[in-house]
Image (cartoon, rainbow, N blue to C red):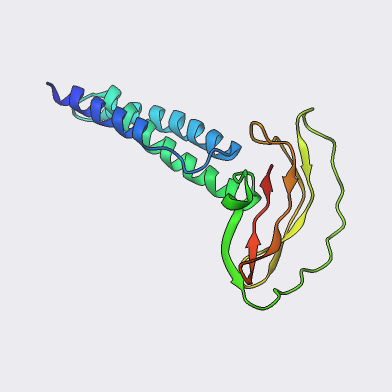
Length: 170
């Protein structure tokens, strides 16, 4: 078996066996965009190397780009709450035994025109990061498949403690 065939087999297995932790819209878009840019850059670098192997360069670049793009997109999904599709997934490690600090009053927002018919307005909210509240402005989002309603970030009393949940889709 040639080195090129081994490389292609190994990279194909890596791509099939690994994936993004989430499936939010930014995760998917980031993975596709990162993979395309990485494949192009890898092909150019591979062609300009001493072996002139653009296929191997494209495979390596595409794999690395998809993983990096998916990771960045996943971070955005987590920040916006678009990744979570259940309260269980949205649970954080922020737990208080006493009542948590009260969030400030919501800020006034201007709702811009709906960008697409299937978009849902997610109102702005105060997100708790463990040390204080940060305002997250409202935005239009296309819900994940089979979900339609956005549940805002909230505190819930569970097992004798107050637990903070990020916003999620249901």
